[in-house]
Image (cartoon, rainbow, N blue to C red):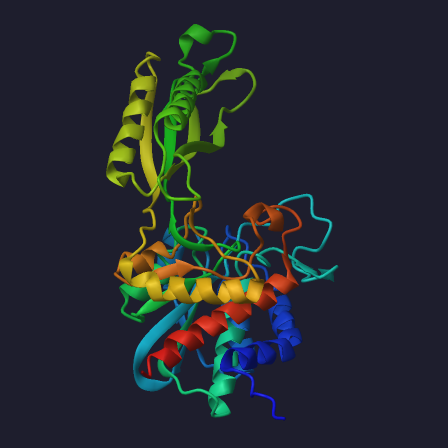
Length: 422
């Protein structure tokens, strides 16, 4: 009696299992180099990543964004990485993009945010779940398919590019946007770092604005001699929050996973002392836009609401500055091979259907789609973003999720690149 040889996907899974400890150590090393953004001094992490990749035989091109350009953007240093793995001619090039920049850890941690500590099958650390984990997912998925190729088990056409970038938190224009703008890459498909079990094909857009409310400073004992900028800011805040109620009641997205638009005022600064009428107050707001909305119309409407509210406070004036315009991700029809392969292999590896949905977050994957490159979001992550404490204290990744996501991505790469031969 003979035993059938394992199929190519089973062989991929076995290679990933055999090298999983190495993958975890790779992720730990990435977590242990801080990339807090702000301040955004992220070149050292790119250098460390390139060093680790070289240990696998992967040559990482280091593309440093000019210093002045970075500082004008409000950051300190950015070096983006591209690893190009070329196979036989005639197939598609698939880019795998993850970002290394991350919000600062904040307070409340019970584990070292830069320790990469493993407890009860979870790896703790800032960016362990979003998205240094997918530096590991994508690197080891690529290594897995190449191991089978080296053994003569599969033949591949096309190529893989690893894009490890450092500007997602500020919008991506100096990350993937910079690489694409300078003609350094133009893949046929793209898979971006994930943050949940879902295969994400659409996401919200984001408009961020700085609103400076001007009044006239005066002694609090003589309030009539001044103009209270804070009262003007309150009028604006009330008008913006009323918009939220209107959105919830009247505007709904048809994309699964996305509900309705929302305005968040995340920062308020102003005043000079408790006994001084505030002469200036600065508000910073974030307006999430559902895929069905027109971003130019949304911005015009927000400006209208602010100016109308300002007009109710005599003597108050306002300056409005756009900080960020990140357009929503609209799925391109050409993404179906990615969706089909990820769905099939996700179901096989996880033992359950993996949903295809949208997300209320925004990411820099939109920059690929804006240039006509079909893209999806998929990688290591929990069932929901909240489960991983992403962007909160004690962010962590369940290591079994990392293992399974690596298998799904490796199987997807193999299916598309090997299928290209026929």
